[in-house]
Image 1 (cartoon, rainbow, N blue to C red):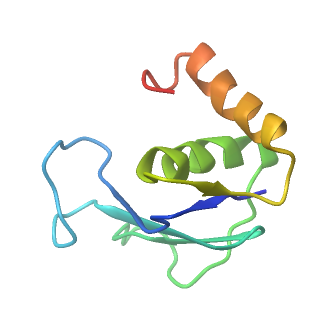
Image 2: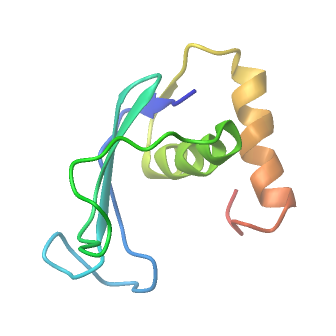
Length: 99
């Protein structure tokens, strides 16, 4: 389900352009395997140390972030056409303007 890249650790913030690891609400993502994605956040209202099942359709958004963060290559166990179609469909839906 998940891809990886030459830069697999992703640091994102939902609303700020300039942010870092110490910025509140920053999110760190790291694809551990094709079926596991480690997501670290500071959402204290959510239960800690939990596994959350992911809907297959949501994997494309995470894969888009991983692909966007990479600079040289992407690694996947699925056919590349399938992964690129998922990434392309996100751009067509208007969810990401740089897909």
